[in-house]
Amino acid sequence: MSSPQILDGKLVAAAVLDECRAETAALQALGVTPGLAVVLVGDDPASKVYVGSKVRTCAELGFHSRKIELPAETTQEQLLEVVRDLNADPAIHGILVQSPPPKHIDEEAIVRALDPCKDVDGFHPENVAKLVLEDPTGFVPCTPAGCMKLLETSGIETSGAEAVVIGRSMIVGKPMAMLLVAKNSNATVTIAHSRSKDLPAICRRADILIAAVGRPEMVKADWVKPGAVVIDVGINRVTDESKKSGYRLTGDVAFEEVAPNCSAITPVPGGVGPMTIAMLMKNTLQAARQLSG
Ligand code: GUN
Image (tube, rainbow, N blue to C red; front, side):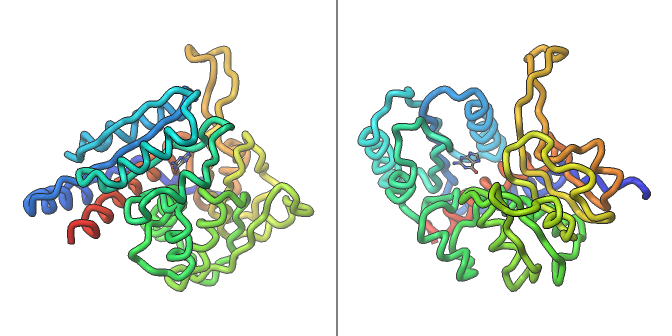
């Protein structure tokens, strides 16, 4: 088989960010500066990296941003208080509480406390409902939105395609399936997960395979139908003594063995990751527009 198309998330994300830059300037001309607050509880190293990139991208676009770093011992009530303050802050249009929080935090209660109009992650039940209803005033979770954008800009036909999503998380798997089955996409969707029987056989049915399980290199060559499109959402840190950091990043897909067999594939890093941040910026602009308009 000829070599696959490498779906370059960095390139597509840069184009999305260019659009965002133009829209930011237009909003600023109306006296509105988009504002994003990112809240990090505890000191998970990967979360720190993600939060840093989000805040840096805000600065690049001319957004106002606030990074709120709280100690791991922060109580549920203290975190709720932070969320309530941000809900009431007119300079803030988007609020993101980085997941996962420490174990003692009830994440669902925190999400429910967010003003749904500022929930740029799209995790609040009101936004989940709007996703199911295909109501464009809702916020679509950034990672699955980024995967859809990547498919769209790469000219990959979803209509009538057999799509398999591995993973049923509220952050990726479930919203991803909803987006693929929506009327503007028209895929036939299967959601598979850790209890699915004969996962490789289910995956082999896919014209479009989305891996979002968080298990390094779980998807092997014989799980993928020849010519399929593979979107790898996993960003896993695995030990690698040859690296200065002591680790390397790898996806949920065994890229080296899978790539030759498929028509298009995302790399890790440089695939879905940059798209997530770009879609967060897009969502924050949408929030600023809707809150000020
Ligand atoms: N952790 C991993 N992905 C995400 C995301 O999209 N949003 C938040 N808040 N936390 C995450």
